[in-house]
Amino acid sequence: SQKIEQNSEALNIQEGKTATLTCNYTNYSPAYLQWYRQDPGRGPVFLLLIRENEKEKRKERLKVTFDTTLKQSLFHITASQPADSATYLCARAPGSSNTGKLIFGQGTTLQVKP
Amino acid sequence: DADVTQTPRNRITKTGKRIMLECSQTKGHDRMYWYRQDPGLGLRLIYYSFDVKDINKGEISDGYSVSRQAQAKFSLSLESAIPNQTALYFCATSATSGHNEQFFGPGTRLTVL
Image 1 (cartoon, rainbow over the protein chains, first blue to last red):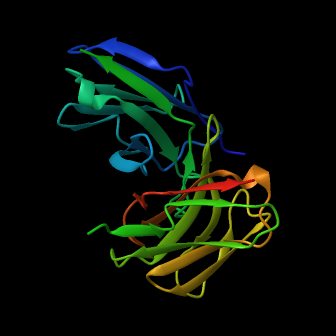
Image 2 (cartoon, rainbow over the protein chains, first blue to last red):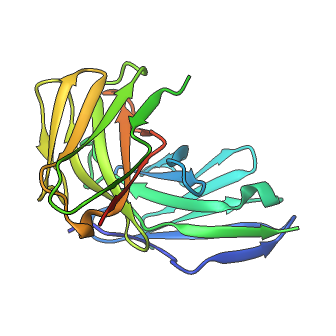
């Protein structure tokens, strides 16, 4: 079965530093990977999508990479701020095509200290 | 106004009771989903529907049922609630086109005693 794994340990960094979160997947490369942000007690909010044929995607201070050799996506937040503190979820399409469903990782909690 | 709403937001019930969680959306999306979230386990798909006449089981459908009453409404039922169904439940929607970016409701916190 397709799996997606994120580091369950919380990531603590100092304000202004770059936060890097990791998402690893198994078996087939997905058609795309998505990243969501979730604040405590709230629903996840979509941030970025990266397709299989894209190496890198940027949006403001966010950058996502997709390495099909390592079966890994990295999510970077540059110049991090305390307001970036949240849990970040990675999600993949179940297979190599877009079937409409998503499989989510368990999320990594980021804490940015002032 | 929120695009995806869920009712109730919190519910405490007893073992054996029937519970219905409701979801409504104003995004005009055909696709709707029900997930549950447990600490350390992430989001797991319970049921999904790609249009009004389509219902599909997800990863953990046992003990749950759903009804798609209209394009905008998708309800989740627990016919006989048990304590291990205590969790945070989310409804989500997505458009048929695109890459399935999902839009989530605020969640329902369900406690089964």
